[in-house]
Length: 379
Ligand SMILES: *Cc1c(COP(=O)(O)O)cnc(C)c1O
Image (tube, rainbow, N blue to C red; front, side):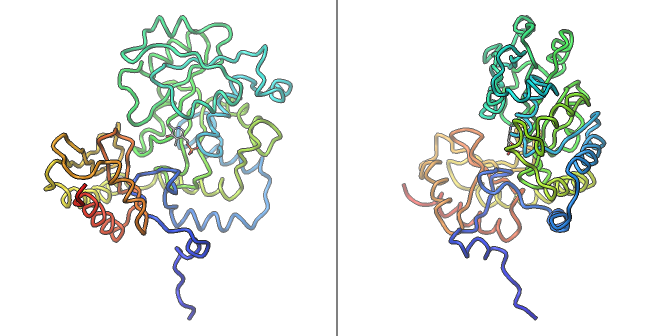
């Protein structure tokens, strides 16, 4: 019998250190661990030739079925989904306009967005030649501001749903009501909002015309794939602008095995018992809470609110009574050990969190030991 091979060796053999990500579904730290059944399906799919048009059509129907939308398309991740959203609302299926992108001179090219919804990925809209028109301020967006920003040049209104986005933003249903009154589509980025599974249908049900989700985040499908769903005519336009066609989306090719992997992943994600999944995460996160809660100067809690914390997470707050090394130093030293350990750091400058999504039992042991070690070090 051949000696069982350590999967980590594929990385070690080229000098890359296998890491632990307690950061959640963070692309820069490896995204998520693929479901084993997804790996198997991708492996099977990789060695068989098919028509990409046929495959994309069938895969799209499946995404539509699970999300309650008219149509769907597997995109090359959510960032690619944003590019395709913009291409669809600006150029549609017009071959002359499609070819001219990102030069949008003379086209309806404005995308209205609440200023509190500006985000790092809105560059994807601008990459297509869209001009972003910001409305509102940090306190509120007035209906009149949104309404007044919509002109004959408006291609869409963009809406972001994400962790830590301002709760003061105008709600999606109101945005939809105003945009639709002017016959303008609403395009939604909900890349990271799964689980909860109910979110798969939520945005479409609220009237969104196109929505994206990442395939490689909470769904635990291929990192390079995403779910783009929405109105049939817009999804058709998105596909016209996407690979395998020679259009602006060609650089974001999705392979046959990624498409199959995503279809497999969304099916398994929908079927999976959410309560059981959350219980698994809760047990893991609680271990981190128990190990850190007595450390003076830290405020440690288990949080799961389906807004900022979509899975039960151990959240560590460095209070003003904290006398140990700075949060940034702790975080940095964790990444410099072997294995490198990545924690969740996006909640604010005084917070670190242990997200259990990609951490198994043994890895949690290591995370806890290393985290305690670094916290206990004198400054
Ligand atoms: C992760 C993320 C993206 C990008 O998603 P990819 O699938 O990695 O391309 C876009 N928008 C938001 C809000 C995200 O969280």
